[in-house]
Image 1 (cartoon, one colour):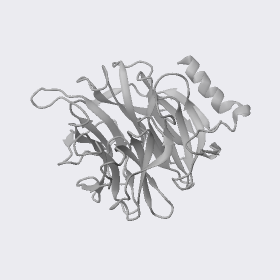
Image 2 (cartoon, helix red, strand yellow; image 1 turned 135 degrees about the vertical axis):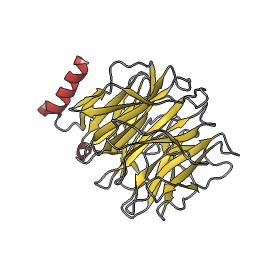
Image 3 (cartoon, rainbow, N blue to C red; image 1 turned 90 degrees about the horizontal axis):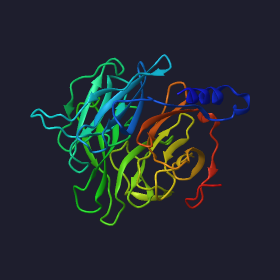
Image 4 (cartoon, one colour; image 1 turned 45 degrees about the vertical axis):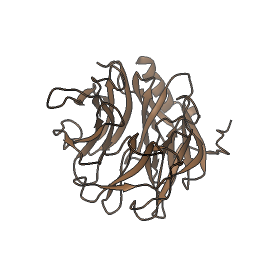
Length: 349
């Protein structure tokens, strides 16, 4: 921990590194009551930053629950388990993929999944009126509504909440199918929106949603085709173009993206067809042509399932799985991120 803090001080204070976009790199916790963690999420609540992830013996084990930490006075609080998969009859299932979301109006929302596997899980939600200090009882989402599968929803100008969702192994090919879930009443009710694909189209899940300056929306995310997918909407998410592959490589691992206030879009992902290192950041002005901006991790190991937000002060916060042992938090100054063209999917030297 001492070495980590020292690194953070150097990154922030040394004049020679003034152009370095990385302002801080730290672990959310040093020790925890679980050996394995994954699938973090981060949000700026009305009271400050909150993170969550699933933790337990290992992914898919029955003891895996949803854990939360809050940033207070510059320090992350000790992880607290806020949800588990214990059912009314005593049976226990693993929890999966928490997603934090703070709407402009209303309480902080925590979506997560419970069930034996991704093909059989169901969506749950809890809310917090005090920025993650305490949580409501869990409520199951209705029918085939699963909630955001991995990445945060977006809120449109009229208050509509739109989240990227998907199913795995429940339907004819492609095995993974993307859909959207849309709410116009603050998350009380949801509409299921199918995203068109074909039998031989890419299996697509875990969308991140981008807002373009012309009013159109874009979803980008994970496939089983060793490349990222894209699809667009020109009517506020009511209909979507057929899912198509981009030139950006990906090893079928989770990604996340955010539209920055300067009009650019920022994507965090593993820019390789196999393995979960390196972990990269790319930038784009139009969501189609991407530029290499930063490599967050390049050593052997697993660095995966990022979450990314831009906070009110303009800074960018990224959390991600660090070797399945810890969650790392990185703070970036986006004004210092410069891109270099990615041509035919090749990360520039």
